[in-house]
Length: 459
Ligand code: ARG
Image 1 (cartoon, rainbow, N blue to C red):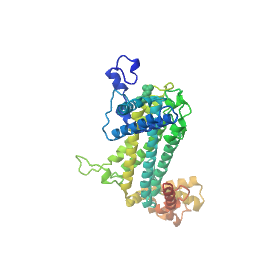
Image 2 (image 1 turned 180 degrees about the vertical axis):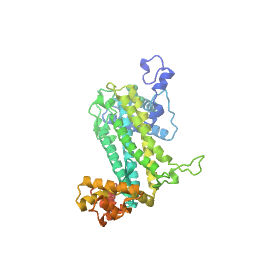
Image 3 (image 1 turned 90 degrees about the vertical axis):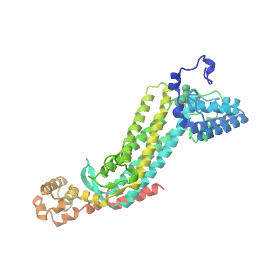
Image 4 (image 1 turned 45 degrees about the vertical axis):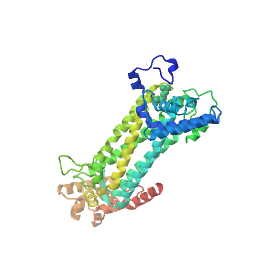
């Protein structure tokens, strides 16, 4: 039989395959709360403008609350024949309140309706991401606080570079996540314009008050162009872009946890709560949570590319292609929130091994730069010459299977006769990190002031 909503023009109902490809109710039921919120605001505005009666608006607004409680309570019967969340809600409203339900869709289309619902949903996700990021930052700051002066090797190319502090390494992620949070805040501010009232695409001849619905739904203002309002999905793309960058950061942190927790590194011990065992190898403790966090970028970036691909080349305004915007964003948001929560849990539970970190920092000639700097400062060598002299000493130590501080003064002096006993002061890892006092450097005092700054920012 023909469709209830547009049956006037149709003699036959849809093919089963048509119904299957067309229906979005399987996923867009996640927009139920936003849909009902938007409809309640729209009905109130219609009544305030004298477009429908107060008593109809009252019946609609109350009926919609009943529908919401049925959905929340799990008793609502979603119908694929009714295509999407918008028509499912409206059809149930009709069953509940009768004729006034048919007046709700005055001066509105599903095009501005879905654009509004989805914006509200994505806006909530921007807020949720910021909250979860702050929680992870607090866990990282907890780690930094504890080990502000624990010395560990800093790496480039995953080769020992220079000693740094555990606190400094933790705070590097706090900075990265701070940028992530600000990207979600920026995206939220830009998306906070209300499409409702753009109607199908051209606006409406009814005397609606778009400023009123925008305000009621917490938007800063109505979107200024009705064509743009119904065809724009930038807000979802910006959310996905911010989510992708954040997921990339989480993936890097997770990768470090995987490396650090290996028997070859032993920098950290992951808690049992975020590890798994092996069904065959009894000794195994695997960092599965970290590995899954490392992988989540795949689906999140995939969703980003997916939505860009759906949107590119679409003529203005709405095309049904755009129904394919939602599932990917839902999936990406779920993945991001889970990855943030797992990262927070892992970082809260993590125990670093300061002794192992320190021993690793002391090997691999990590203070060679300190030696070269000493030659510049104390013996007046140009840095390039100092670099060469130090390189010869590293080669000498390596040939003897020693570290730099184990060379004798006599051996040192064969490389340059300006070297004195004083050089040994700079070859220790503690002196090395303590000397890195330039702004943003790894000196423990610097790290402590960064921790204090971030604690302040996060309250
Ligand atoms: N379910 C649709 C979507 O998700 C709602 C908008 C339908 N509009 C239309 N003109 N068919 O995009």
